[in-house]
Image 1 (cartoon, rainbow, N blue to C red):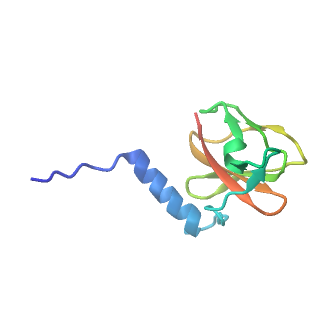
Image 2 (image 1 turned 120 degrees about the vertical axis):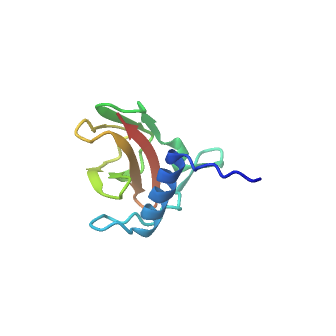
Length: 129
């Protein structure tokens, strides 16, 4: 007899969030387009490194300030909740490090979108305590 196990809740949240981010279904939200695209940066030894992998977020989970490193080519940073609602939008001017105060955000899972000058974007996830 085959027994069905329920899907863990965190997997369900990620699946629903991915669907909302990809389609922009929730009303009153800013749609996140190009979710699957990643900008690539070429380093001096000609090895292509994923732009999203170079960006560092800490501490995770975050309580008051989110610190971000390796964002030299980023022009805009936006923070969205799991429903796709934009909470924070920051403009970057060739900075390599940035601190974003997030203490006003409720506890939960958030997505942060990094947009570069050529219009490419990368999305990372973080948890707010």
